[in-house]
Image 1 (cartoon, rainbow, N blue to C red):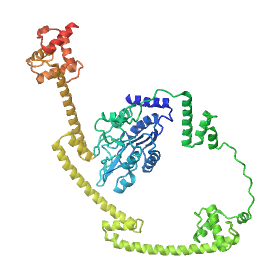
Image 2 (image 1 turned 30 degrees about the horizontal axis):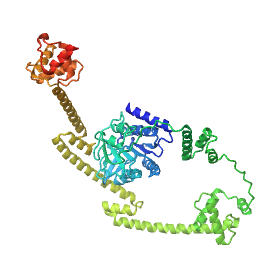
Image 3 (image 1 turned 60 degrees about the vertical axis):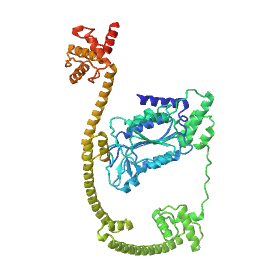
Image 4 (image 1 turned 90 degrees about the vertical axis):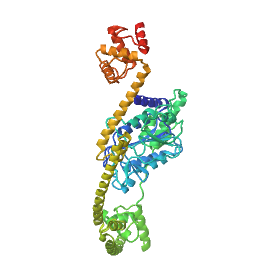
Amino acid sequence: MLIRRIVAAAAAVACIQGSALAGEGDIALVIGNNDYIHAPDAETAKRDAELVGRVLSEAGYEVIQGIDLTRAQLREKIAEFAGLAGPDAGRLVVFFSGHALRTGGATYLAPVDAKAESLTDVLFDGVPLELLLRTAGEAEDRAVVFVDAAQLSGFTPRPWVEPGLADITAPDGVLVVSAAPPGRAIRRSRYRDSRFAKIVVEQFFSPGATIAEVLESVPSPTWTTGETGADLMLFPTPETVLEDPEDLALQIELAFWRSAERSGRKEDYEAYLRRYPDGAFAAIARLRIGSAPTPTPTEPAVDPDVAVEESLGLSRNERRNVQRWLTALGYDTRGVDGLFGRNTRSALARWQEAQGFKASGYLTAPQVALLRRRGESAIAEQERIEAERRRQAEARDNAFWADTGARNTEAGFRAYLDAYPDGLHANEARAALAEIEAASTAEEEQRRARREERVWRRTLEADTAEAYRDFLARFPEGEHAEEALARLDEIEAAEQAETLNRRAARREAQLDLGPYDVVSLEQRLAFLGFPAGAQDGVINNQTRQAIADYQRTRGLEVTGYFDRPTVVGIVQETGGPGRGGVIDGTAVLKGILDALQRN
């Protein structure tokens, strides 16, 4: 409900101020990568990004949004955002939801086609979080970066990389808000928006809320670092006083025109003219769509040189041969496609001038014959040179293989591939390295399993919620992950029950019941069919059970402790003093009896 109210408030801002003006200069980059190819889905990422993007767009931000982006698409969106961000931009908001990887103290945001099977994959496929932070830093004290990349189930940990966030150092003037601290993972449900997205929309996007106010109430495990302007409001309070109607009309027309200019599309200029046929920019709009008449071209005179070449009737393949011959002779035609364009004509003119012909750029029959003889001879010589070059290259390749890969060592194979990545023995070297790496991976898996067992034993000894959370952050897919999750749920449930008991005990203590009050309540419970044990004014386990049974049957909060609703209910059901042999009681209980009698 609160999210819908915020969306409505954002829409109200757009209606009052004009959709093209409400977020003038405010820019947002919203990415939601959910459907990963080589890792479990990033639960809720798509739904969260769509929610955040919709709220920002309806509030007037210029939103650059992408869902399930590949490496190339992710970099393209970031480049588009970087092109708009800058010192002259307004507020900058970045929201990324998906998987992240950390290595060497740096965080890389993962596109949906990331593999993470090697350090090279991580560095080449991922986008450094530092890149986004530095881009956001262009708008000093006006930038907030939201990162939700701490899902419990992500990429498989490797010796060179682990899932999640590394330590983050925010540039000056940039606030970073993460769903969890670096190194910690959290669980998300695929069936509802994430808790983090709700915090972003309900608190950070609350109209009129400053960053300083929001940070005072952000709940755990949400984590922040860096700082931006304390009085920055991502969603300012809507202005309710409109400008002069004529000024507002001019602003709306200007916004309409700017929108058309930004897109540059013909249909947008036509839309402007339909709405403002006599507008301030009507003449420019007509020029933009080319509505002014253009002169009819006159028929050019026939060039004799052109006519001579046309009489030869050169086919498309023959023209390709002409281009090959010219290129072999050192006159580059910039391609061999059988089309005589500007580059081919220029090459022809240079060759004609070198042979003492008129440099017309158009061929005659004798020129074609001469060009064929010399071109074919040049091509044959080039092929001979190329064959010799290949023979020498293969000899060097084989010699290097004999000195490196033939020794059957990992270092030798790598040295060969570094020098000859596409060499004669490259496939052989890669196959051998794959076997070595497979053996190394198996050994590493054994080491990881032994490391997990050691950590698990320490976790069992500690038997605390924090210990199980740390274990799951390190081994989210480990052999003991399910057992750790089950025990963590037990501990958290026990902690919650203990919290409820403490709260109920405080409420009971606040009643300030004396011994006679307790005796009276014990007698009344027994009278109602809930034996509370010895009626001695001492609350024991049997008394607690009687209280809980009464609360359960009366639809009250079941705590096993006296509270005001419970005491009032017991007194009302058993009547006034002396009923059924019940004693009057003292202190608070008498006060309750008196109040009931007065009413």
